[in-house]
Length: 295
Image (cartoon, rainbow, N blue to C red):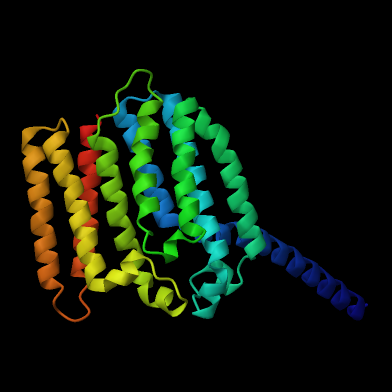
């Protein structure tokens, strides 16, 4: 009798273990996909453009469609990037990358990118035909970057196009709303600055696998300077041309310049991350002006 109960308990434990394993596997794949989509820039870009839709006057339905379209587009770009970079990430031991770490397959990430891209199409056209085309061109620029432009001297071009068109996409969804020149200009400068800042942590790994975009040709110091100057230029364009309160129009660009000067001065110390932090603060100031100017 005791052997019967022992066997029964072992069988139940085995069944419970199998069920737990299935649950863990079911949860692990979505979590790995979430990590593979480049969550930080995906969330940041989606939040910024959604906030722009709110301040620009899109109604609740329009704001939701903008948020969903931009999220789908950014997910597709992020997943495509990780699917295409899987070999390079594995070669340099990027354990922080889910595909390289074996947490999810290249095929799964590639399918996710394709599904997100397909979903992005009707969501984009929900804001109107022209707005939809503009947004899909912006997403196409992101795909072009992933598909090879990132490794050329033209690597900044997709960022200029994508970030320049995203604010236009928002305004084209408002019947009769004008699109002032400073809005796509500031967006493009913001995107270009983000490109130089975003690549900084990966310069060495990229160089080891043959990726030589424009930031790689500038080097770390040159890329930090380019990021800062481009983001500062975005604040200046908004300060000079956008309908901002006078105090913001002159004070925010001045604060951005002072932050960059202080950051790069502190960055002379070996290992200092002050320049990178100064670039992030300047980016936040540029986004703040962009949102205020569009309200």
